[in-house]
Length: 219
Image 1 (cartoon, one colour):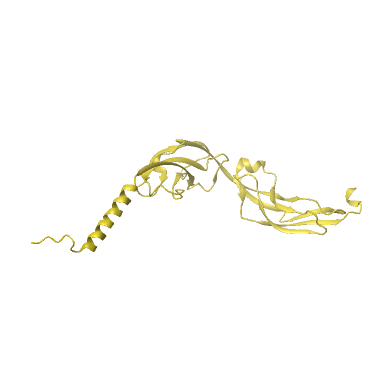
Image 2 (cartoon, rainbow, N blue to C red):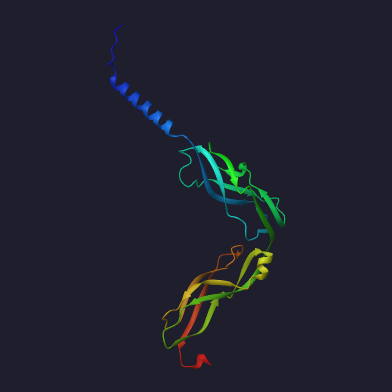
């Protein structure tokens, strides 16, 4: 049989190109290791308990996998702790590698720190007054007569000990610089301590009553 080296030369060129691209893609997708900061997620927190302030919200994990998998910000990776059986008090939780959620094919070699201390407290609810946050000054010749807030109180939920020390909730800032008439704003309400929250999101209607300064307001 005669040998025809140039028979089907087009197919041979295509096959060679595909093989070369496959070799390059496999050869460049090598194994690498990366350390990334990922969220620490608390699952199944008992209804009547709250995590006290000071709990970490992220940890560092060491990952090993193909370079193509360990690019970007690793948004799908997190470490989760199941608190379904938690009781009030301080507890040490060990952060094992099997608690890390990763894409298939990515290996977790280490979690740092290896453990975290969490304090769980009884949840409570309390009604506190709402204080308006007002900044600035009216125009010359005008003064603030009074500040009205509606609603005047809100229900706050959080750890029992933290709630006991809470004096008030605050509104977002209302600016009155240069005002010559009443300033009325609808703003959000919140609390400074991140361990507490409003029972339901609320907004306040803040009315800053501004009048001419006739000298009576200074008495």
